[in-house]
Each structure stands twice: as C-alpha cells, then as structure tokens.
Image (tube, rainbow, N blue to C red; front, top):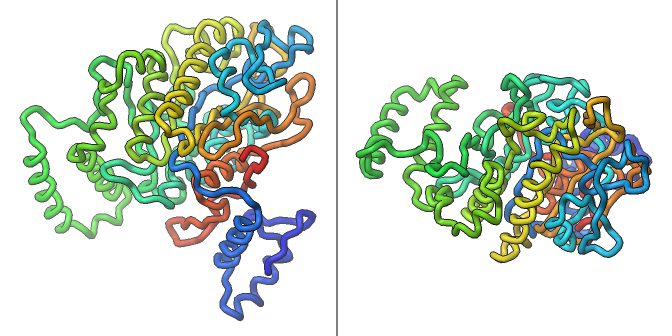
Length: 466
C-alpha cells in the first residue's frame, strides 16, 4: 500500500520523493507510476468520506481586475478608515457572519455559499496571477504583467482540462468561455485561457458576443440568408470529400485548428438543441431583468442556459464598460469607493444572486457549482488616488451549489485583510475542489501532445467546504 506522510518532501505531482524511489521496484511487479497515482487517488476517495461527482457543471463567475476582499467577503469594520474603506457591513443568512454592505442580495444567500477568506496567489500582476487562478499553476516568474501564452507557462485552463475528461455534447463542447477573452489594455490576451500543452483542439469555445443586444445571435455561426440546414449538410458532405483528399495536411497546426473550428460551426448550426441554448429571447422579461440587462448580467443568464443544455464548464468574464472609471473593471486604482458603489458591486450582487436563485428555483443548484473568482484582491491601504492596488497576498473567493456545504467560512485573514492567519488556500486547491465536485480526482491523469501523463492538478481538495 502506498503511504504518504505530510512531512516528506513532495514532487510536483504530489508523490513523495521516497515513494518515487520505490516505483522502480513496483514496476517489476507490473505497477507503473500512472497506475500508482490512480490507485492512490482511489484509496483517498474511498477513505475521505467525501462525496464525488455531485456537480454536473460548473460556472466560473470571473471578475476581471480583482474584486476587493474588504468590501465583499472579508470586511474589517474595526480597522482604521484607510483600511476598512468607506462602507459598513451587513448581517448575512449565516449567523455571526457579516459581508460588505454593497452586496445585500448575496448576503441573504450565504446559507448556500461557502466563502474562502485566505486565498493566496503570491502574485501582484493581472496576467500572471490570472494565469495561476485560471490554471492552478503559478506563472514562472511571478508578478509579470502583459505576459502571453508561451513556454514554460503553457498549463491548460480548467475548461481545457475538463475537455480531456468529458466528451463534447450534441452540438456543444464541454467548455465555453464568453462574452470575450480576458486581456490587458492593448488586447494582450492572458495566458492560461486555452489548451496549452494539450493542444488547440482542447481550447474552450470562445464566444465573443453581447447577449444584452436586442439582435443577439451567436457571432459568425448563423446561416446566411437562403441557406437551409439540408443545403448546409450537402456542403458539409462536399467539404468532407475535399478534406479526405488533403488529409495529409492535417498534421499542420493551422489546418487542424481550421478543421476543428469548422466542425464546431457545423455542429452548432445544424443542431437544433444547441442553437436553442443561445436563444436568450425565450427567457421572460422578468428573468432577464432579474439578472440585469448589462452585457455581463445577460452573459451570466446565458451561462445558465448553456449548462442547462449540457455544457460542463462555462466561464463568464467581466468586461470593461465604456465611459466608466477604471475602464469599468475591478482594477480600481483610483476612486475605488465611487466605482464600487456606482456600478461594480450592484451589477455583481444582482447577477450573482440571480444566478444562485434561478438555479435553485429550477432544481439545478445541487448539480451546478458556481465559483466566484478573480485574479487577486486589493491592497489593505488606499493609495494617493483614493484607489486600492493589486494584492495577491490574501483575497477571497466563494463557491455555491454543486456539493458545497453552504453557510461555511473557511480561512481567516489578519486585522487588515493583508495576510492569511489560518486556512490558507492556493489556486491549485481551488482547481482541485472544482474538479472533485465534478467527479474527477485531482490525481486523474491527462496527457500532453507527446503522450506524457500528468495529474490534472497538484492541489488538494478543500474538504471543510464540502
């Protein structure tokens, strides 16, 4: 039996150095390292008492720019004003637990929410800390801005990893990102949003769209006027014949990606159920108003329709809002309080609470995990421009539904919400918990393009919130 002691030095896959040295001997009796890891995972699952696989889907409620811990899940009302900020606290559904006063709707739902108050990325840059939160793997090096996807930072996104474990559905993939990718100013796209070393075929579908638009349709995936589905099918047959004649070109990356994208487009155009998932006009005015008529609010509503249609992971990215301070993002380097009160917190509170309530009303919350996340938090002290700056030393995230034990608060920060005191959580642990809730052990294997096996995450499941 494999024995792991916490005091032993661990390799990156979670197997101790001592155990790795034993693998050679085990190989003589037919047990390889991948089999050993899988065996340990099975033993851990059987012995932990935790329920696997309650969630069928996950929605990543992603707040680009970094939501502040002080005004959300971890207020510090007894701290000096330059720390606590300009807002008070309100009681929640969880006895003895208070949140920032700007999230009144969410405060009434904490009996369904598990809060993590000691998340640490140790990284103070949007794109590199974002990479870590999107993949569960630290960027090399830490705290580097405007980085892009290139070696050695090619770990796949959570959605891409999930696509290795779950087949695509009827006309829809296992993972979708909307309404746009995450990028720094100048459209410098963050790493960690695609397939990485798994290859482009595992990229989550990126749907650049505005579901709040009156004439919303899936961009670039609509039939041209006068083209029936039968005619489209005939075109596809002709295209397949052509593809067969040039099959040797498939090894070229650009051609392979074109073929994959073409297949996706055909599947979506010809699959009635898939197309219907995007018909947000089917929703009542009351439901659409409940989420808010903003681009983000309607994207959150669309995410519910997509998981309802069978998509395993939908990532909804907060988008910049033209004409608003700080480019309309959570990156509030100036006029922090005004931005929070004017639009950030009201939009977040409305759409997040609407999603939880809507899922519960439809009987979907128990099988849908909602993860409230961003790339980091904000500095304890305000700067000279009345703003808060980047802070990866401690921040907050939250889970709801999908096997999570509501009404729990895991971890504690210090008196200024500057550093963790207890219950420290790393981004890889958040990834491990998400996969666990979806029924995949953290030590489940995936394979890169050379066939090399590795665990889907190196994190540990946060057992106290399950």
